[in-house]
Length: 160
Length: 152
Image (tube, rainbow over all chains, first blue to last red; front, side):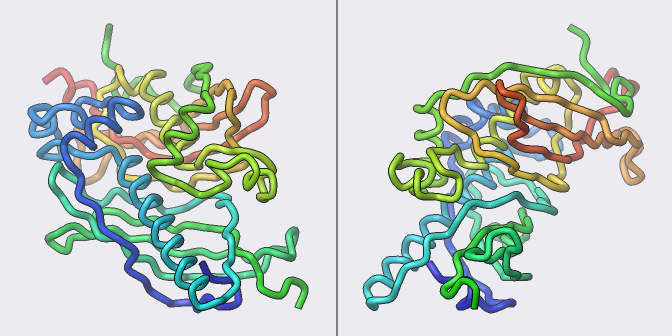
């Protein structure tokens, strides 16, 4: 993972893809979002979604899963080069989350992000605050999901 | 049980739901699958993190909020799904053993311009723990059938 100073506004990165199986969709839905169109193929076909659709919270959680895996790859690469590895902090929230199109069973969603803003934290001078837009695109290249994420990122030289 | 439709949602407090107990095992299982950062999985690493102790993923808290909304009223509402979330604020960490209470307010209820048989109800939902500390606050719209359309 990179430090605050090393991150450029506008930088874009593809960070992974995931295929949603019917079993995955139903398992997540049974636990967190048991609406009929997330649990049953027939109900999904009869809904606005037109098929068994993943819960939006499932799509968002998979996006996080891929972000964390990508961060671990970047950290391993940095460590292999003998560089100091930045440990990112928590997120204070997100904005403008859009479930634009349904994610149906069998869809493969590929995720990218782009850094939109960065600023130093007034209350916590050892941290910077980053905003990045995460976007999910399906196998037909249709945008299905996006949100503006916020995260605390450590500064390399706090106070400088 | 009667199904709630758009007409049942008026601006103001809608209801309070819960409590929902969250175990350490649930927090670890969600984090292992979706958010395997040390602050959500490892006690020692978590102590050194900004949140000073093991905490649940914010996406776990969001997913739990969805489940509490479902159990509270969406499960008996003519819901057509949600277009997104305007804003989510993660204010304080979810901790193992927390008992969560959900407060739901209707911010706005309007008929869709493009689909007049559908209403769009914007909710403000907050989760607090047993000590009354707010853990998160979300503003999000849900599409809900109007009564005539739901009974047709």
